[in-house]
Length: 318
Image (tube, rainbow, N blue to C red; front, side, top):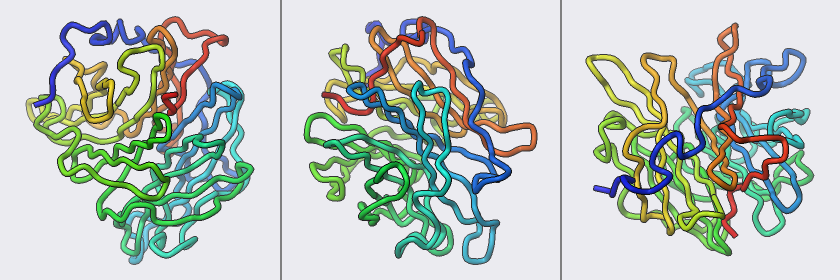
């Protein structure tokens, strides 16, 4: 069993950044564009050196069919200058049928600036809608993807989240209701650890499954790697969704929070979450919610102490 955070300053929600406040208008469906079915599964990166922000997201572009029972999905990119106001680019960067293994498209994108290039990893959906592994591409000018490929063949792998530490790349992804880790020194050569990083037996609030990992950095900490994630448990016959985190000095040597940051009952919980951190423990959280018409949209909340001058770290631990 992984150790719990019982004596570190980051172990409580208040120490981790305090209460969260919804701060900006959501990123919603565009009835006149290709995202008219809604936008969800946000992946965010921030480049502190340039101040640039990028969001990758998913949108359903075809209804369910025999070939794709959950519909066909595409990935888009939005750009912005502050992490709260976004402009969606006019066309998807990954679409159904772009390459072999992507018959039903792609979901759950995670962007990362690495080596001066914006990279994108995502769940690759094969015929039948099942995940065949993790896809990868390089985003050029924010408008299209070069070198689109299947970076990691791992059937059932979904929801990748990637960060870097020097020349090393780290990925946490969901498979079978547990979170797994892979490492690489090249964007398409991944080695998956034999055992899950976080298993469902790790804590009571995730005994029914773990999902939506968000792997980020906090460079002012001796434990710079931060893994936010969602868990599911059944409490008195009710479904409980929780948001928790773990920290590490090295990927894989995780210390778990001793209690969830927050929880939701029934179907009102988070579906997908992305978290970036700033010095002193402040954080921003982007998550998928539902608009009044039931379509997915992306909202942001900020913790106490965040101002327009707050400098956020990205997914790179330098």
